Length: 97
Image (cartoon, rainbow, N blue to C red; front, side, top):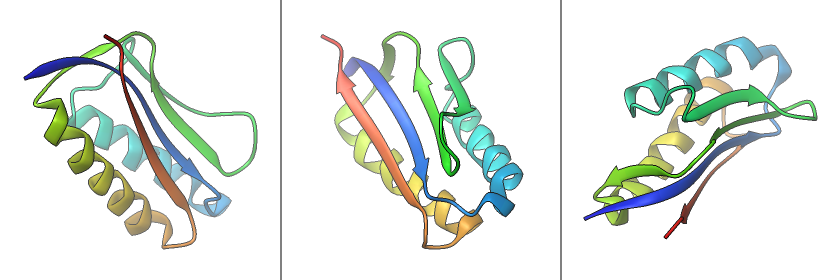
């Protein structure tokens, strides 16, 4: 079943020396999920050590009930692979309907 979702992909407290590598990996991750601008933006937000990808409007996701937990685990694994275990990776999935 498809659902309209508001999405946020966050990485907190990462090593600033890994900033460029983390941004490239996060962009590739979102591209592979077909989450691209202008529907989903990726940027460093506000404070050091905070990267956020977020939807600008609800995104239609097929199989949302399975996709959410799966994409969360893969996002965490990507962040740990690039930065190591010291960062905190979070995915927020909110139903827009």
